[in-house]
Length: 234
Image (cartoon, rainbow, N blue to C red):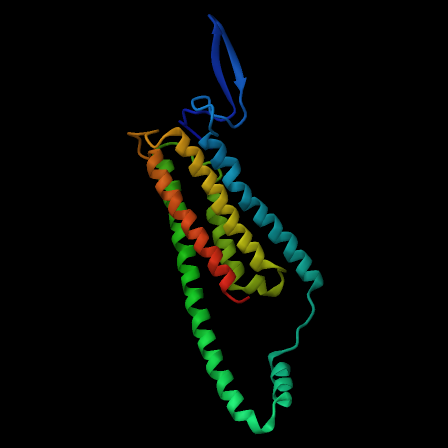
Protein backbone atom coordinates (compact mmCIF):
# COMPACT_ATOMS: atom_id res chain seq x y z
CA UNK A 1 0.00 0.00 0.00
CA UNK A 2 1.22 3.49 -0.80
CA UNK A 3 -0.32 5.01 2.32
CA UNK A 4 -1.29 2.73 5.16
CA UNK A 5 -2.75 3.55 8.57
CA UNK A 6 -3.29 7.21 7.72
CA UNK A 7 -6.55 8.09 9.50
CA UNK A 8 -7.43 11.08 7.33
CA UNK A 9 -7.89 8.86 4.24
CA UNK A 10 -7.13 9.77 0.65
CA UNK A 11 -10.01 9.76 -1.84
CA UNK A 12 -13.17 8.14 -0.48
CA UNK A 13 -14.50 7.63 3.00
CA UNK A 14 -17.39 5.56 4.29
CA UNK A 15 -20.09 7.07 6.48
CA UNK A 16 -23.31 5.56 7.78
CA UNK A 17 -26.21 7.85 6.83
CA UNK A 18 -28.94 5.48 8.00
CA UNK A 19 -28.82 2.25 9.97
CA UNK A 20 -27.60 -0.40 7.55
CA UNK A 21 -26.66 2.08 4.80
CA UNK A 22 -23.08 3.09 4.11
CA UNK A 23 -22.44 6.01 1.78
CA UNK A 24 -19.10 6.43 -0.02
CA UNK A 25 -18.21 10.09 0.06
CA UNK A 26 -15.53 10.97 -2.47
CA UNK A 27 -13.80 14.14 -1.36
CA UNK A 28 -10.81 14.07 -3.67
CA UNK A 29 -7.62 14.88 -1.80
CA UNK A 30 -9.40 16.53 1.15
CA UNK A 31 -9.16 14.93 4.56
CA UNK A 32 -12.36 13.67 6.13
CA UNK A 33 -10.88 14.34 9.57
CA UNK A 34 -9.67 17.84 8.73
CA UNK A 35 -11.98 19.13 6.00
CA UNK A 36 -9.92 22.30 5.58
CA UNK A 37 -6.70 20.45 4.71
CA UNK A 38 -5.30 18.09 2.09
CA UNK A 39 -4.45 14.55 3.14
CA UNK A 40 -0.83 13.64 3.79
CA UNK A 41 -1.31 10.67 1.46
CA UNK A 42 -2.21 13.01 -1.43
CA UNK A 43 0.87 15.10 -0.67
CA UNK A 44 3.20 12.08 -0.59
CA UNK A 45 1.77 10.30 -3.66
CA UNK A 46 0.83 13.19 -5.96
CA UNK A 47 2.00 16.70 -5.06
CA UNK A 48 5.59 16.26 -3.90
CA UNK A 49 6.53 13.52 -6.43
CA UNK A 50 4.92 15.53 -9.27
CA UNK A 51 7.90 17.85 -9.68
CA UNK A 52 10.26 14.86 -9.79
CA UNK A 53 8.29 13.29 -12.63
CA UNK A 54 8.21 16.60 -14.49
CA UNK A 55 11.98 16.97 -14.02
CA UNK A 56 12.75 13.52 -15.39
CA UNK A 57 10.40 14.06 -18.34
CA UNK A 58 11.92 17.45 -19.13
CA UNK A 59 15.42 16.01 -18.82
CA UNK A 60 14.65 13.39 -21.46
CA UNK A 61 13.22 15.95 -23.89
CA UNK A 62 16.03 18.47 -23.34
CA UNK A 63 18.65 15.76 -23.83
CA UNK A 64 17.03 14.63 -27.09
CA UNK A 65 16.76 18.25 -28.26
CA UNK A 66 20.35 18.97 -27.22
CA UNK A 67 21.67 15.96 -29.10
CA UNK A 68 20.00 17.19 -32.29
CA UNK A 69 20.98 20.84 -31.90
CA UNK A 70 24.50 20.44 -30.54
CA UNK A 71 27.27 21.83 -32.67
CA UNK A 72 31.02 21.58 -32.10
CA UNK A 73 32.46 24.45 -30.10
CA UNK A 74 35.90 25.91 -30.74
CA UNK A 75 38.50 24.04 -28.72
CA UNK A 76 40.34 25.66 -25.85
CA UNK A 77 43.50 25.62 -27.96
CA UNK A 78 41.84 27.66 -30.71
CA UNK A 79 40.46 30.19 -28.22
CA UNK A 80 43.82 30.50 -26.53
CA UNK A 81 45.48 31.09 -29.89
CA UNK A 82 42.99 33.82 -30.79
CA UNK A 83 43.53 35.44 -27.42
CA UNK A 84 47.31 35.37 -27.78
CA UNK A 85 47.22 37.01 -31.21
CA UNK A 86 44.90 39.76 -29.98
CA UNK A 87 47.10 40.81 -27.06
CA UNK A 88 49.33 43.79 -27.16
CA UNK A 89 52.90 42.52 -27.33
CA UNK A 90 54.27 45.06 -24.87
CA UNK A 91 51.71 44.18 -22.17
CA UNK A 92 51.69 40.42 -22.73
CA UNK A 93 53.45 39.37 -19.52
CA UNK A 94 51.43 41.74 -17.29
CA UNK A 95 48.09 40.67 -18.71
CA UNK A 96 49.00 37.00 -18.58
CA UNK A 97 50.06 37.20 -14.92
CA UNK A 98 46.90 39.09 -13.89
CA UNK A 99 44.69 36.72 -15.84
CA UNK A 100 46.40 33.71 -14.30
CA UNK A 101 45.95 35.06 -10.77
CA UNK A 102 42.28 35.84 -11.38
CA UNK A 103 41.73 32.41 -12.92
CA UNK A 104 43.28 30.73 -9.88
CA UNK A 105 40.99 32.64 -7.51
CA UNK A 106 37.92 31.82 -9.59
CA UNK A 107 38.92 28.17 -9.80
CA UNK A 108 39.35 27.91 -6.01
CA UNK A 109 36.01 29.62 -5.38
CA UNK A 110 34.25 27.42 -7.92
CA UNK A 111 35.76 24.31 -6.36
CA UNK A 112 34.66 25.36 -2.87
CA UNK A 113 31.12 26.05 -4.06
CA UNK A 114 31.04 22.71 -5.86
CA UNK A 115 32.06 20.88 -2.70
CA UNK A 116 29.32 22.69 -0.75
CA UNK A 117 26.80 21.86 -3.47
CA UNK A 118 27.45 18.13 -3.31
CA UNK A 119 27.58 18.13 0.49
CA UNK A 120 24.16 19.77 0.71
CA UNK A 121 22.87 17.43 -1.98
CA UNK A 122 24.09 14.46 0.05
CA UNK A 123 22.55 15.95 3.20
CA UNK A 124 19.13 16.22 1.56
CA UNK A 125 19.41 12.72 0.14
CA UNK A 126 20.03 11.42 3.66
CA UNK A 127 17.10 13.48 4.99
CA UNK A 128 14.83 11.96 2.32
CA UNK A 129 15.98 8.48 3.29
CA UNK A 130 15.40 9.32 6.96
CA UNK A 131 11.82 10.38 6.21
CA UNK A 132 11.20 7.16 4.27
CA UNK A 133 12.60 5.02 7.07
CA UNK A 134 10.56 6.78 9.74
CA UNK A 135 7.36 6.53 7.70
CA UNK A 136 8.02 2.83 7.17
CA UNK A 137 8.73 2.19 10.84
CA UNK A 138 5.46 3.92 11.71
CA UNK A 139 3.67 1.75 9.10
CA UNK A 140 2.28 4.86 7.38
CA UNK A 141 3.39 4.04 3.84
CA UNK A 142 5.89 6.07 1.82
CA UNK A 143 3.74 6.99 -1.19
CA UNK A 144 5.91 7.89 -4.18
CA UNK A 145 8.46 9.77 -2.06
CA UNK A 146 11.29 7.39 -3.13
CA UNK A 147 11.20 9.21 -6.49
CA UNK A 148 12.65 12.24 -4.69
CA UNK A 149 15.79 10.32 -3.78
CA UNK A 150 16.12 9.13 -7.37
CA UNK A 151 15.80 12.62 -8.78
CA UNK A 152 18.34 14.04 -6.31
CA UNK A 153 20.92 11.53 -7.53
CA UNK A 154 19.97 12.31 -11.15
CA UNK A 155 20.30 16.08 -10.66
CA UNK A 156 23.70 15.59 -9.05
CA UNK A 157 24.83 13.44 -11.98
CA UNK A 158 23.58 16.05 -14.46
CA UNK A 159 25.65 18.77 -12.80
CA UNK A 160 28.70 16.54 -12.36
CA UNK A 161 28.70 15.69 -16.07
CA UNK A 162 27.79 19.27 -17.04
CA UNK A 163 24.54 18.31 -18.70
CA UNK A 164 25.37 14.70 -19.55
CA UNK A 165 28.46 15.71 -21.47
CA UNK A 166 26.83 18.79 -23.00
CA UNK A 167 23.98 16.81 -24.55
CA UNK A 168 21.30 18.38 -22.34
CA UNK A 169 20.42 21.98 -23.12
CA UNK A 170 19.50 24.43 -20.35
CA UNK A 171 20.33 21.79 -17.73
CA UNK A 172 21.38 24.40 -15.16
CA UNK A 173 17.95 26.06 -15.26
CA UNK A 174 16.30 22.65 -15.21
CA UNK A 175 18.13 21.84 -11.96
CA UNK A 176 17.28 25.26 -10.56
CA UNK A 177 13.62 24.70 -11.37
CA UNK A 178 13.77 21.37 -9.55
CA UNK A 179 15.12 22.92 -6.33
CA UNK A 180 12.48 25.66 -6.43
CA UNK A 181 9.67 23.17 -7.14
CA UNK A 182 10.75 20.83 -4.34
CA UNK A 183 10.99 23.72 -1.89
CA UNK A 184 7.51 24.97 -2.84
CA UNK A 185 5.77 21.59 -2.79
CA UNK A 186 7.35 20.66 0.52
CA UNK A 187 6.34 24.07 1.84
CA UNK A 188 2.75 23.25 0.92
CA UNK A 189 3.19 19.91 2.66
CA UNK A 190 4.25 21.63 5.89
CA UNK A 191 1.38 24.12 5.66
CA UNK A 192 -1.19 21.35 5.26
CA UNK A 193 0.30 19.19 8.00
CA UNK A 194 0.34 22.19 10.34
CA UNK A 195 -3.41 22.48 9.85
CA UNK A 196 -3.77 18.97 11.26
CA UNK A 197 -1.96 20.15 14.36
CA UNK A 198 1.52 19.29 15.53
CA UNK A 199 -0.03 16.87 18.01
CA UNK A 200 -1.46 14.66 15.27
CA UNK A 201 -0.14 11.08 15.26
CA UNK A 202 1.27 11.80 18.72
CA UNK A 203 2.48 8.63 20.31
CA UNK A 204 3.29 6.99 16.97
CA UNK A 205 6.82 6.35 15.77
CA UNK A 206 6.59 9.37 13.47
CA UNK A 207 4.50 12.20 14.86
CA UNK A 208 3.46 15.07 12.58
CA UNK A 209 5.65 17.47 14.56
CA UNK A 210 8.71 15.33 13.81
CA UNK A 211 7.87 15.15 10.11
CA UNK A 212 7.39 18.92 9.96
CA UNK A 213 10.87 19.37 11.45
CA UNK A 214 12.45 16.98 8.93
CA UNK A 215 10.71 18.54 5.94
CA UNK A 216 11.59 22.07 7.12
CA UNK A 217 15.28 21.12 7.10
CA UNK A 218 14.91 19.79 3.55
CA UNK A 219 13.25 23.02 2.39
CA UNK A 220 16.17 25.05 3.75
CA UNK A 221 18.66 22.82 1.96
CA UNK A 222 16.69 23.08 -1.31
CA UNK A 223 16.90 26.87 -1.03
CA UNK A 224 20.68 26.67 -0.53
CA UNK A 225 21.01 24.29 -3.50
CA UNK A 226 19.09 26.78 -5.64
CA UNK A 227 21.43 29.62 -4.64
CA UNK A 228 24.49 27.48 -5.32
CA UNK A 229 23.07 26.39 -8.68
CA UNK A 230 22.91 30.04 -9.72
CA UNK A 231 26.39 30.77 -8.39
CA UNK A 232 28.19 27.86 -10.00
CA UNK A 233 29.39 28.18 -13.57
CA UNK A 234 28.17 25.73 -16.17
